[in-house]
Length: 312
Ligand code: CDV
Image (cartoon, rainbow, N blue to C red; front, side, top):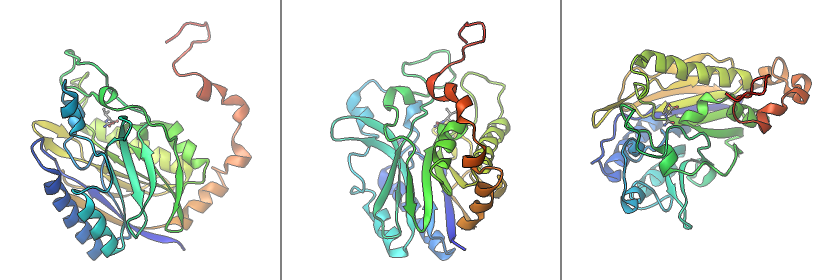
């Protein structure tokens, strides 16, 4: 038995005017709650230190850069690392990363229980667009503010388990899970900011958005026989509603815990990493069952090409 008590620390809205210090104070309260609940690992959402700034078109690069962190930990987040170490809780947090050579990434990190950063992931599937789009009911400018991740889908040894990370839109792409599944991943953690509506389709309901989120996460868990913990930033950020619905999903694809609110809310679940073994040795024993001779298109072709040669 390799049990890890996991906390999914959903966060309620962060307004544009909120300081990082105020946000970290909320995260500390969640960490204290997690300590009381016996958690050994706590996952926070994508871009959890600020509002979801890619909804704003910002022309001034200095202002853009102000939404990013140039080091981690830094003055604002050091108390979080200190508290995590004091509680012996490993953490995973998402933030905008500005590198010393001026590159911008949407990043998630993972620590061990001593608050050492032992893993980093940079979001690969960036949704949205890179210029102001007047046709949309709101903007989603991730392609403007971030470069696609350059670290692949790494898997890390932490707390006697194999762990990987995804960020938000990545959870909709089976290739992302399988890249980690092929490295034996046992636990995938991810944070997200999912608007409650579709900026290009007014008919899409929050319930449908929640359904798609669960569907993707449950499929990724089941098809790779891994736990998946998906953690939302939720609620109304300056008039822009975000879906909640954070979940902890078993290697069978079953939802074990699901958030009930759109606020700061901690989900707690004891997860035995040994429960990933059966699926990995049976229906998803990749070595016995995968047929890579037929998967060439997946790694060589991006868009649709119909059998008659026309492109989709
Ligand atoms: N932050 C995100 O990546 N959000 C996307 C939205 C744009 C669909 C998501 O997949 O939830």
